[in-house]
Amino acid sequence: MREINASIPFDKRLWKQDIAGSKAHVAMLAAQGIVDGEDAQAITTGLNAIADDYAANGVPVDLDLEDIHMVTESRLAELIGPTAGRLHTARSRNDQVATDFRLWVRDAMDEVDAGLLALQRALLARAEEHVDAVMPGFTHLQSAQPVTLGHHLMAYYEMIRRDRSRFADARVRMNECPLGAAALAGTGFPLDRHMTAAALGFDRPTDNSLDSVSDRDFALDYLMAGTQLALHLSRLAEEFVIWASQPFGFVKLPDAYSTGSSIMPQKRNPDAAELVRGHAGRVMGCMTALCVTMKGLPLAYSKDMQDDKPPVFEAHDMLGLSIAAMTGMIETVTFRTDRMRALAESGFATATDLADWLVREGDIPFREAHHITGRAVATAEAAGVPLADLPIETLKGIDPRIDERVYAVLTVDASVASRMSHGGTAPAQVRARIAQARAALGDA
Ligand code: ARG
Image (cartoon, rainbow, N blue to C red; front, side, top):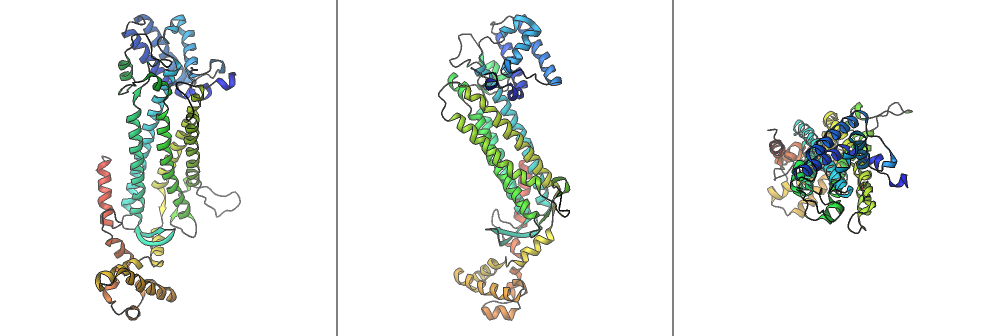
């Protein structure tokens, strides 16, 4: 029973929040005349001493004391005697743990947000550096149309922007204080729940005591936003793994984020990227775990809910590492833009530009233009040259409506420069988006 019952081995991570919650609670009890001022002072002084001790020496893990709330209360009793027992007036561990965990998750959201801001800045810096660097754009991982590396990196900026907004939404929604709901029904003591809510930085107290002690939406919101974020980081990581492979050779990963092989001296493995990709699966597993824990629980508190913390802690640790590793890789990776350009030029990636030109200049229906272009690609492929290197006689032989002006659209630079539609890959468009993004981050 001791072992299955105890949460102290993991909920010791809530110690700061637990002490902050207790200090707010006892100050309110004193203000309301529920506990006298001297006792409240002794309790506060004791809690401060315990905080100093935890900060210096860690939280002692005593399974008999079950959880962080009991460990701290028993320590307080050792320090100040029976007065310690007044702290828990009009409070239950049910509203206490709900409050502590909300405070912890709120801090976790702020940490993730700070990490993502740094990642966005790294993406913006590298995107700006490579706003003109042409690379193959892919669909089905087949060379499709030329894009720029700046545009490709900015795609991840947009994903991270949405991730930050998901965490921000969740933070607003969760910022209500459950303290004062007591065990489940509220309390007969004349509490001032607005006072404790404000002291702990919440916008207001929660409005239903049963919901207050049963709600773990805030933790699930964190895990769901975290899962979406992990998926984005994993896709970026996967691109790095592919790009670092020899057949691609689009990037040289920094030594700091790769490892050698113990047997093959030439190896430089993209371990950090692979672990970011791997961690995404684990974060999703944490999200699933808490969903399954919660799905069948009747109101109000059940002990199952003690299992809410490990998946959130685990996911948060993995997200922190993934964000940091990805930011470091973005900042320090070497992009082989010469290789990207060579591949963009070799894959007939401007075939769509030829078809579009025939539509525009020859007034040819797109389907027919597509057919003519197919013949041009087959001819170039047979000759082993890019489209732009086919002689004009050859092109005219394919269709007499083609003339010299077509070469202006057959280079990859002309192709990307022409993609001026809103959100398109033209360097002018991407530059404008980078400037907007900088302004949105307050960096402009
Ligand atoms: N250790 C418990 C948890 O983390 C605290 C709440 C216990 N409440 C109770 N009624 N046993 O959920």
